[in-house]
Image (cartoon, rainbow, N blue to C red; front, side):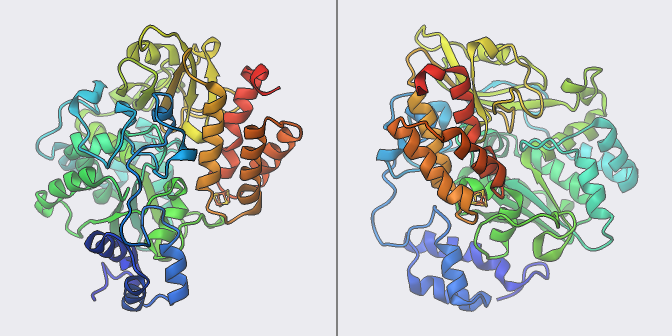
Length: 483
Ligand code: SF4
């Protein structure tokens, strides 16, 4: 087996697992052992890594039941996740759903701005970026204030400069894992506006000159993968070094960048300690830039239209638009492109009430965010915290509850989700979250605040650190539900 772009053989571990899983419908011990020998990973390590991916099955037959246990489905009548085996299907816009992923429907693009406008033709943005050279192109990205759209909003130019400053061959990894229930924006871009994304990727490649370029895409997002692979295959000389498209293996924590890097290296998908940060030592020790699909797609706009669409005297609104995935109890679920800084109530008004029931709450930022009541809908969707108890703009996932929804059950659902998705690496998260669930399910809230404090403060990664948010916010705004 040949090495990929000079990378160690173990880079092939996850793709080979997928191949075997697709071929056989499951992964036998023999199949995993054969692959481990091929890529020279110790058998015990290979087995531990393979069995850590929730998308793989390790017994013949069966399946995962077909139903979705995500919150958007639950508030629309699906049984809670306790009683179904399935994970979120990421088709929250048509909840309740069952079965695998389909192509993202064009009609679910409810409000299009520049990013979701009809897809581009030609490579004008790439030509503009190439003609100005790396240094000037980086300055332009800096001036436009493009920040990461995966939820952290870190300035893209600063990240790129930090990686380039290492003075070694670097890796560019696109995070298209998108494993947060209620979020489907990257899938939508890859399915419906793939050329916009691919031009952004080509611009990033022309500026960063990476030794290796990888798109790490959710393992179940097959339509999105096919769509982007088709455009890349037709792009000819645009990617002289090629692009590796690697499917993931599921799990919420896989969207965390160091977890994703471990998965690409054929290791157990669990977060790494930082420092070093990926820009210093990422994929196989290379300085690595990890950017989200939406962030990269914005580069195409910048180099076609200039900085003007990204500039705004209001700092909260600067940096361009944001894609919001809206689902749950709304009349028009789907994808809305709006400026950063848009008040939540404006987004909700666009999505509309369902069956005449008034909005009661929004889970802003998913299981790592927090609940907001109607009295807080005036808040603007800006990067960072929307309320000190936990709600965030995050990657733009907004799950809406109305007066017919069971809020207490929704809180329990988010707690169960976080406990289930814990990778188990650190004790506060692994041991604490099941106790939080127990406490909520049984209605014993004595000591719960202390427990949440420990989980939030002592966990290694964002999953544990932010898991208290939905519970804290709900207890703050609806104390009567938890007394
Ligand atoms: S906080 Fe949870 S998900 Fe993150 S490393 Fe620790 S156990 Fe794993």
